[in-house]
Length: 229
Image (spheres, rainbow, N blue to C red):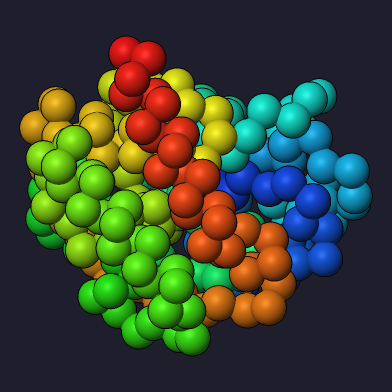
């Protein structure tokens, strides 16, 4: 890790009913990073207690607002703690915390303001053919509407600079928030890089949010969002 001051790096995790896995996710991140903030999006289980017990800073929404809103709350908190680099990281254990440092180093070396994780540049683990087809459709949709060429979309593993986070704010509270980032990058000509990441599709992560039906719903949210503009 080439960063001398890990106090400048904050990992933001949005969580909703992740009580059975969040402690392991937080502990895994803290093996490599110093600062983790979990925004508990009004879970009905012990997500907040488990995250706090594992060593995370914990913020709690009094009502369920969605992943985009939870990330925005976590990012705002990280900025208040003088974060210079903010990592968004999924709660369900599908990301590998060992890959945070290489992505941070790549972002710093590039001089860009955003590093976007790509499962199609890295090692893809047991990705279903149906989901791959839906992700390909989402990729084509993004290229047409945002005019930005990527190898992956809707990957929750990213590294963003303080400058990027100060200039960007999520408007989509729920899953379509991921494409808001891409729209912002395209419309504001933000310098970005893609970086290979490993996605592990466990039975838990598939049950929680990696079903192809969710990807189709994201596409519908995006389409409706553009129609309403």
